[in-house]
Length: 447
Image 1: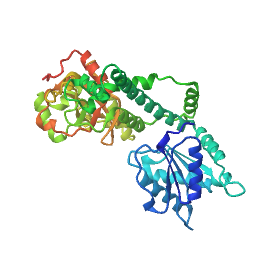
Image 2: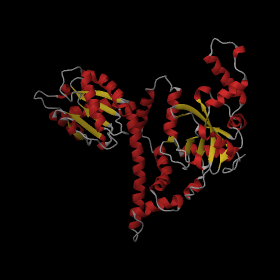
Image 3: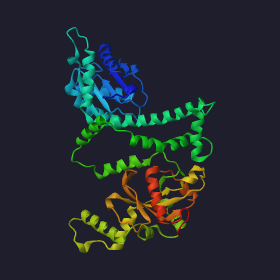
Image 4: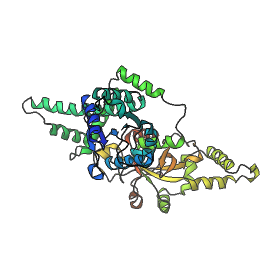
């Protein structure tokens, strides 16, 4: 099992026990940051990237129930781990291995997303010789054995290591290009190469965002196409084999879509920015397009017959004891549907304008957001594209975008709306291709 270097920390209140685990790790070439715990002043916040934590359960002397010790460990990790940190794995270096499942549950409750995905015990008492000295080699073997028995944790480690390796390959290529140039009568330096990468994106002043944008396709290709060794294939096969028959529920699928496709750091006017139009600005949007928003739903977004079926089904579920004669009329059903829907704007300024920093050339697709509980709808034509269900403002939303309703530029009141995030390029490019294929001209309002 490969440990990712300096991403390992060890915590213990007994110096001898701490030195035992640190020596074992270092004997296998693993860098470790040790904390000899003597109270809150002896620990500090670590940099992001901690992936493995070795910790004694009994960090504080207590005659109380074990849960007090578990909460103490949680409090220590709450201080040590930064907001966006892992770790993926906690190894409880303890004389009470039977308490580790309870410790893991406390960490889940206390740390939330920062809790380890796996906690495993390593019993101290099994690694002491007759003189009370730790058996360093046996500890190192046990660590590797324990970690390698969980292929899911191993797959997560492998994914992260491969991503880091792909990034290192790109950086090495940049450095090699510069070093080759320097050896040839004063060729480009690394700074020259970085500047050239930035200028290749937009030709303007060099910016770090441009460099990242330039290397992103190469990074993705290296990550995907890097050779997968037979040992890795076996590891991943075992990890996939751990999957249960259970599938992700709708809420989990939406959260997965959101984490993959929505960058929460999007800003107003940025390509891909996704903004919800507040109700008090609906009248502004209506004036721009020249008609009631409700009339757009089945004129340019959805098929009315499918909407009606989903509404009737939803009404029957909510009113199981009612008969058909009590069913609301179609007009009332469609009014309820329109009231439940939300209106969104998706910034779709062409990439060429973004690269030339034409921030004023803003264009936005008008999108219809249909709550997930109303069911999947049929689009009104090829000009409509449905985005994956996302979790927006805590609600599962199916977004429908149409090439027939675009704004250029959005009015000032709407243009200032703070986006919920930015649709990442992979999904945004797919939407744009669909829109382009509809042969509608972006930047013109159709009304």
